[in-house]
Length: 304
Ligand SMILES: [Zn+2]
Image (cartoon, rainbow, N blue to C red; front, side, top):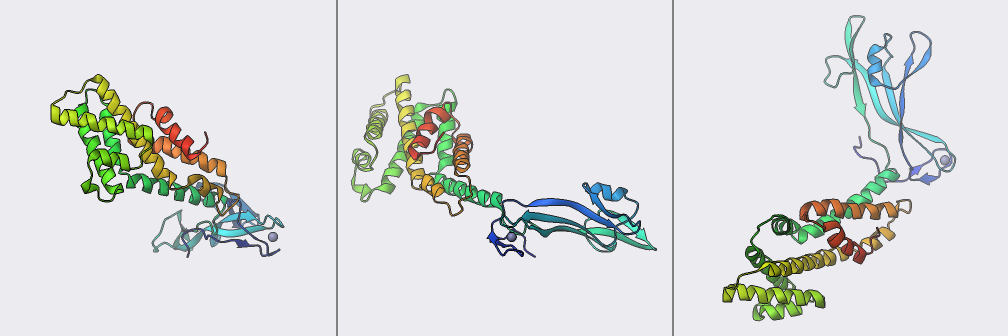
């Protein structure tokens, strides 16, 4: 028995048209009550079964239904079968009852949607994109950045000196990993050759000088320095996230999806929301959404 919906087109048994179902719906349970001769009884709530005095015979069925978009034939697939079985069997009980001295209950067998429908294809697309984004943020060690952000940008009375040292160490690691022969270069060269945009390069150069003053000249950081560190840090972090996400080509991924029925606008909206909420939860500093994330999204071409 399959456990997940099949990723395949459905062939219509009447007109042979092959299609991806727009949606599957569950049809209400239909019980045939043979004993009283009244025929079909529609049950909307499973609990109702317990209240019906006359037991249905052997099966209670629920079905998945969808229609062929070409000829509108309604296709049915089993969703759930409750079979009347002897009470000694293992299984969930709907009700236990006695018939001619033998105890029975209805054992439930459930079946997933037989084929993926529009919603499943959409969910698959957004799940794949989100997991790519997660992976690329993980590659950046985003959780460590989050710790730094939450410590320095949110908490009060945090030591800017400690922050500067950690920031500098991280920056040096980044430069080392992106440059050849980094051992032969000093930090000034490393920053210069790492390919940062000019403005950011200038900011990082300020950080380098500030760090040297603190380490070699026992300079005490003042409030203005703390602002310089903070701004350089945010510009650097924004650059890292932006360039990492740019590698994913999110816009062209969405534009070139295999299935045309997937709503692109909605996908882009979800990507945006994901970065607002999930990345926001990790970095968590004031002004994150408007001052930090919005310019990144604009760069990536992800609309408001
Ligand atoms: Zn058809």
